[in-house]
Amino acid sequence: MTPADSQSEKTKAPQPIRDAATLILYRRRGRDGRLEVLMGERHGASAFMPNRYVFPGGRLDLADYKIRPAAPLNPVSTARLARCKGTGPRKALALALTAIRETFEESGLRLATPAAKPALAPASWAAFCADGLAPDPARLLYVCRAITPPGRPRRFDARFFAAPAEAATGALCPSPELDKLSWVTREETQNLPLPNITQFVIASLEDWLRPASADDPACRVPFHYMRHGQRRLDWE
Image (cartoon, rainbow, N blue to C red; front, side, top):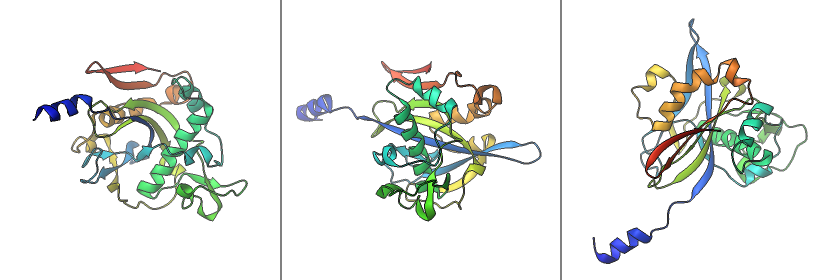
């Protein structure tokens, strides 16, 4: 490395942290009611987490503030997100809608109900809103937050939502971002290449979905991030 290269490395601007949202669709199968979640493999050419298995999700878009939902975000998730610094009711709803839009784009599944009043949808929502439908975030449960560690090619402040599979309609369809879509149990994910935060979410999901937690707006949400090179876990 030349001195110029070394100086360039030192002065390189840190990656901006972008707001994002992820949706964990889950269902129960078999006599034992085992929990399954929808996951897919990110393509090998992806700049962010190539060849890793993740839940559908992506970056918050300005259009997610403009789309009119069919129903409001439920009080439990709204209250939990309100404890996130800088996240008022409007942004909380936009993040939930981001999770819904990204899930549709990456998997073909749509959490929607008929729109009470037809409205002109932003371009990024046009396909979703076809047939007079509007996004319905009523059953999204906010369960976790994580910020991508420094040094990654892209960084996100990701909010994780969970919703039952029966809230979604459509057929699974791989996308340019997410392939090999499938419903997997916690045991089956042990053989998959998963990001650390995804491992934590899968290990914790059963507890998060218990009524004592899922119905409690005061239930504290785990928040993963790094500070001074050390992984941190706080609760919001």
